[in-house]
Length: 206
Image (cartoon, rainbow, N blue to C red; front, side):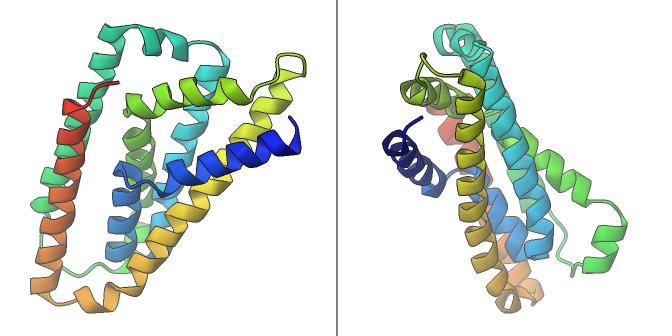
């Protein structure tokens, strides 16, 4: 992969990452509620799913999803249902302070990681987009494994930087949301955003 091709792919990755979506909502809500250290777990899940999706494309299986309307619809509605479920859980979350040490000790960070994995993994539009985008930057005359590795590192690093930016900015606002009233408003806001993201995914086309 030439430097010009890589820079073009980097630019595309930045545009994809900064576009608001379910991953950004998860990063912001986790950063605001629990702080950046907890948001890192959710972001790690998002990136794990991203690498899985890239591996699927590299194996050629992504083409099946891109061409099969049934497979696309099944995954789309599964992803939409999961986002709506997250929204309902967030909306109904109790108004209480979170002890950061207790949060970590209880192992709920693994739950955030799994949320990150599922949020990205059940978004078929992301996979179809990778199917449409990545092959344009692959030179068939060069070793493909190395090219996919470069693309994977570029996508993950870019997404981590952007999602971390969202989470850090949200974390800076935590002090404004410590009253029961503000926590309740925060739960309603992000619950509504997750439901809206699920509805948008369910109503979207390819």
